Length: 155
Image (cartoon, rainbow, N blue to C red; front, side, top):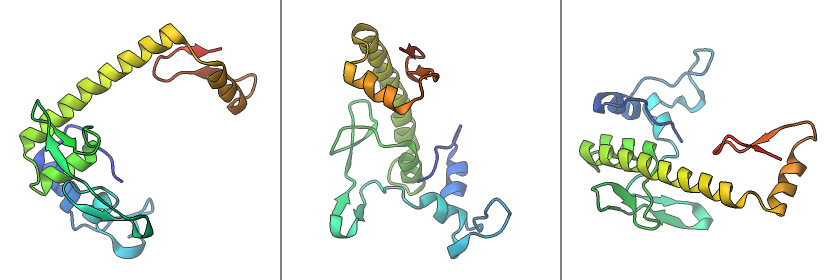
């Protein structure tokens, strides 16, 4: 799996996913297997409309559709695919640049809405006894536990 490109352009994404430059490690040496930068960035990224074979676990077809705002969504879950999948799809010509932009914009809106609902839910309901016990089991007594989505210390 790769990472999303900050302030992407089609040219940057084409270089990222189609580069023939050798992939180098932190020492500047070519990695084992001789992968290129493009192969490295594509490795493990689902292909929109493609099928991935998981051996004895079966295979998955990555079917997609357009949502009501022209954004790309998975057929199976109605979620917007991760940005790296959308990046590769626009480079491969599976989706247009406009579809990519609409999808990333809508994903940002939906993520903000989700986090707002989560914060309101935590404000109203707090944490169950079971959740608090699980957190206490994971941290030392002198460690402060903070909900990274609300920024609040959990007592």
